[in-house]
Image 1: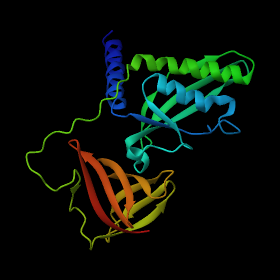
Image 2: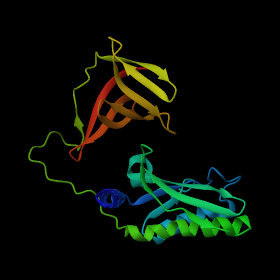
Image 3: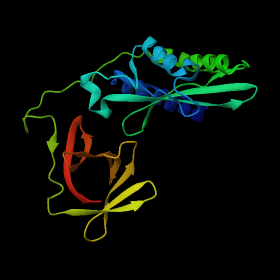
Length: 238
């Protein structure tokens, strides 16, 4: 009985955590073509996904549409929708996933199912049922509260951390899913994992996970620390 109650508590806590996280995002980008489709907006599933996201309060855009200026240049201000299809010839299953700019799953819907025989009807019904689980989220956009600072470190919200000096050149060594950045002693300082953007990697430094991003031909390791964006300029040779 105790194990069961603990399991329920963990699931409920995870649900609340996902809800709190997803409320921090207003925009969702929907691909114009899903991986299981043979053409763009096949059976109007991509358009339907956009419409259903808007039904539950998000501002959704197809990735072929022009984006608002406030999110055009920053991937980390929005979520990215994925729809997966599975099942057999007697049942179609679909699931919706929302990921952040580091490909971390922020929310995953229940699996929607359909026994319709026609592909168009089956996909549409299964996708609509998958979105039914969004109802329980009670999504409402709540931007992160910016707490007043006791001390102004610089005019921006970004802290320039001096962990890396300009003379500390890191060498990028290829690994199957990206690179490992090593110092002069061959110690691995950062692991950089590939994303769909060649100018940005998911980066892991010790116990800290963030992004390695190129800005004006310079590389920065960025992450959040106590709700403050930290940006470490690094010198790396690829």
